[in-house]
Length: 391
Ligand code: GLN
Image 1 (cartoon, rainbow, N blue to C red):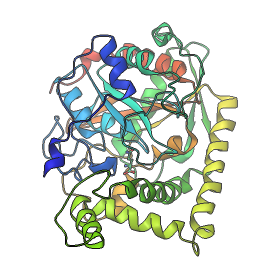
Image 2: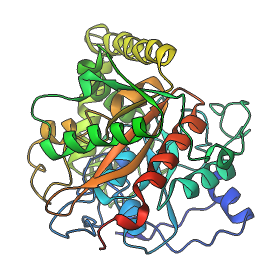
Image 3: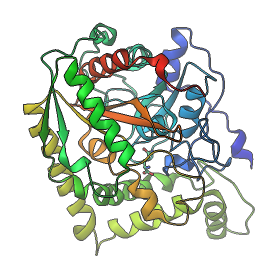
Image 4: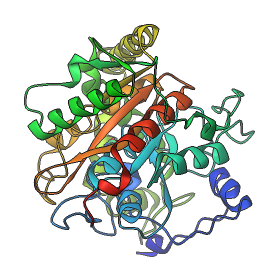
């Protein structure tokens, strides 16, 4: 297909900023089609594989970025995180992944998926690299009205290794029945390590967490159905032969979109339709506010939250592809922060007996990237990067 060789006609703001400090691009990374998926299996290029064990998925959607970083093919790789697509693959591949606060990094030049959630971030090998990257790309951009004037601090100054006096919350809703035992043990041990460094650990509650996946999977498809409308084969996207305009639209959109994208266009169109808007979309927006308020209350008591990034380590390629709901549940711990617009960092906190990485998610308030970098860096220094099993 021609669009597989697509070469962007202009640089995104992030690309321009990276080039301006001398970054060299090694190539494009694999991604689920239009950033929709949790395993990289919806990619039209075929799935990326997990470098720790190629029978397993790297996670998604920025699975190519996480796999390339973990496999030492690059120093860092850009990604987008709408509902977890940097944090979750970083967790499954054993690298660092930062989802900045909504509005922290320009999306100019980045294809829109869910405009009220999309963020631009990175997979790196160390927290320090993630802090350097964010300091380079963050900030107000006249080409993206959602970017904030909020100052961009020197994030590397937060990397003192010192978390004395900080308080971390363990939200009880993130330790649920059915989650992997090795993941739970590893996250609780990570909390103990931070406690050992002088931090206070406190159990807290985010009561609306259980509604977050359902809320996300109304809001995301609704915005997807709108954002995908531009791919009509005339202004954007795939082209096909046809005898008339209507046939042209049918052919272009049937051939150009994969099953997952079509599923979301249908769900979103339904949820936004006149008869169902109040029952689904409006309700979802109200619940989104409740999820956001949960976090706001939590951050009155704690500096950051410690949770698993994913309820389980990497799963096998093909395992969840026939069951979209199971696939959506992979995002159970990442979508709440996305709905709230807050920032999140994945750092590797352990490995399963079968040598698959386990990721700790550190969540901070909006514009609180310094706090999560500080915690992630202290943790990384305490556990020692060199103790990792080798690929
Ligand atoms: N897995 C989520 C989804 O499919 C997240 C996607 C993303 O962050 N781009 O919607």
